[in-house]
Image (tube, rainbow, N blue to C red; front, top):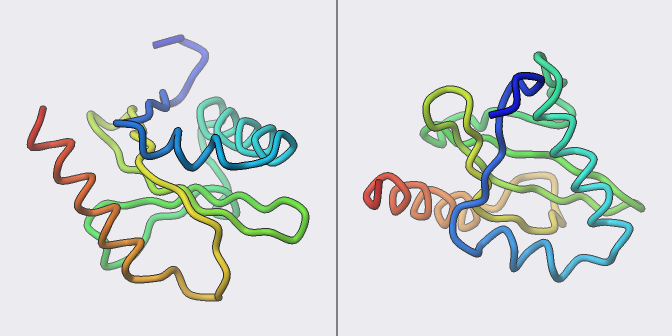
Amino acid sequence: MDSNLFREIVAYGDYFDKFYQQLDKKTQLKVDWTLNLIETIEFVPIKYFKHLTKAEGLYEIRIEYNSNIYRVFSFFDDNKLVIVISGFQKKSQKTPRREIERALKIKQQYFDEK
């Protein structure tokens, strides 16, 4: 890992890539900017990175662009590694439970394969 980074972001499987590829180019740039922020600053503002309560170690990377809200689920492995697992466009105030459950299944799969 680069010594200038506070955490390294790695995508597990193709879940994140499928989400990312369906975004338009400008939204992809905003996602890239947010991921870079999370890698390079020690204390990431909750506006961009938040632990989900009652979700067994899941975090959401929070992205806003052009009045659209996107969430990307992630978790830590060995304290520095953020595994990006899935993403979706948020259309309501509350994060849909089915999206959280899907992310938890992917997280479990990651650790089962490790």
